[in-house]
Length: 198
Ligand SMILES: C[S@@+](CC[C@H](N)C(=O)[O-])C[C@H]1O[C@@H](n2cnc3c(N)ncnc32)[C@H](O)[C@@H]1O
Image (cartoon, rainbow, N blue to C red; front, side):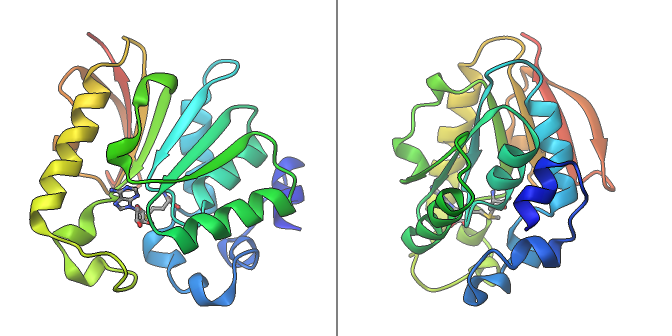
């Protein structure tokens, strides 16, 4: 199975990994979930020291967290406000007995970033300003929400200690506070690796 292969450091295609998800959400993967390869690169940068607590801001069905938990010893928490996606993520974590991952059904506005050391952000609020990015009609997306979510995440990240790491993917750099230094970029400048410098 895909998770066992990742644990054993064997490469897994996205098609193979996505087969752990119910068919009705697999179609979202290409556009909305991070690929296995990029999840591995991001997780490796974030899991820089022992016992790191990593938060995925808008975790969907948990692809980034599940891959990260299978490939590193860090602990991953995914926060997601679509209940059915959160349930699928939890079901996968249980099925594969991944002890280093948790999924929380919540709006990010209700999450305090204090308990986390590192962050992954894959453009979670885009659907509020780009209707074509909506996966379903369950969320009442509004332009005004984009700014509220963006500002909340920005303020929470600003409060973190020097050395805090972030990986952002297809996410406007304006969402990352100026106190974070860009360490490197890859995949045609869609994937950015940050560390808090001041
Ligand atoms: C682009 S997907 C990324 C999924 C996952 N991080 C990955 O890389 O595989 C963004 C997710 O953020 C969720 N989301 C959007 N706004 C949110 C909010 N305010 N609080 C929690 N989750 C949110 C969406 O429902 C969607 O599932």
